[in-house]
Image (cartoon, rainbow, N blue to C red; front, side, top):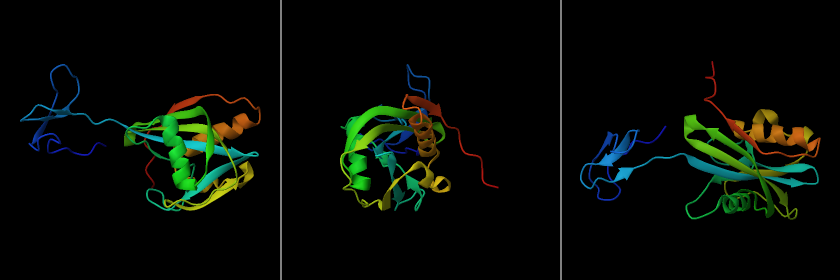
Length: 185
């Protein structure tokens, strides 16, 4: 899933895919300056904003999964913490301000080299609206969730954990690993 690296970002020379000394995996190594170019999973961070028993969902205005529903989440930026990323993404996608709670789900998605981290959160008010990457936002009760239109399996899994635990009032921390989805016939 990693993009092919052809040239060194340090000096511009060609790179070769090989196992560098002291390593066990193939890496893009610069033939001129020796720089090793590591490629690591991307971290997707977001929130599960709650208000009076309802959850704030966003309908995506961008690919992948344009037009489908998700929790506010996106790629973490360099120089920010995971909580900062969750709050920023919620503000960007839903124009919503939140009080962040505990990390709720941490889901590895190795076939696309991603890890998804979702925090529970409390909306600070009902002043929310679609951000630039969002077609619409909605505060939905469990029976209103468009389950067949949820954009990502990680979000569906997070929501299922949430609604199962909301009945008991005892929320845990959940980890999972999702394999590649089955091909569509």
